Figure 1 (cartoon, rainbow, N blue to C red):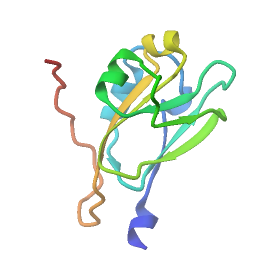
Figure 2 (cartoon, rainbow, N blue to C red; figure 1 turned 90 degrees about the vertical axis):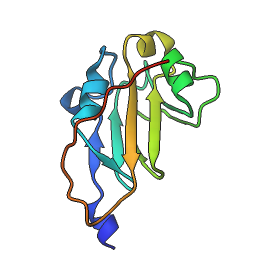
Figure 3 (cartoon, rainbow, N blue to C red; figure 1 turned 90 degrees about the horizontal axis):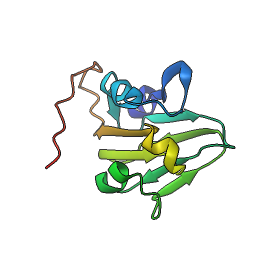
Figure 4 (cartoon, one colour; figure 1 turned 180 degrees about the vertical axis):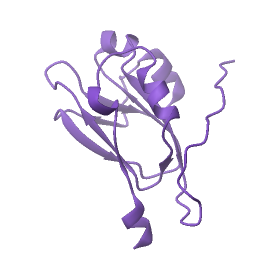
Amino acid sequence: MGRHCSAKIYKVGDSEGWTAKADTYYDWAQRNEFDVGDSLLFEYDRNVNDVTQVSSALAYDSCDSSSPKAVYNTGNDTVTLKEPGYQYFISSNHAQCVAGQKLEVLVVRYDPSRPRKIFPFGKTYKV
């Protein structure tokens, strides 16, 4: 019960919502900390975009939506983070994704003894 009460809902992109903006979501994700059980709220124009969850960093980096883990397309979608690790979200509109409409979050296991505060993310290096 304590776990359920402490889950948070994060509006992706804050007041601007889910749109194509370079580095917006990287910066946004760095300011937040995500636990298993938290949710992401995506608000967007469903006539132009969707939210496509992809399974790998490669699909995320290349904006490849050909084998999605899940697709959300209502324009107002809440996605619960059910497992720890990196979770990847892109727009299947390739031009929008390439323009920056993609989100990578690191989800940690819920630990009720751990205070919820923001920790800086380490740098990501591609090899």
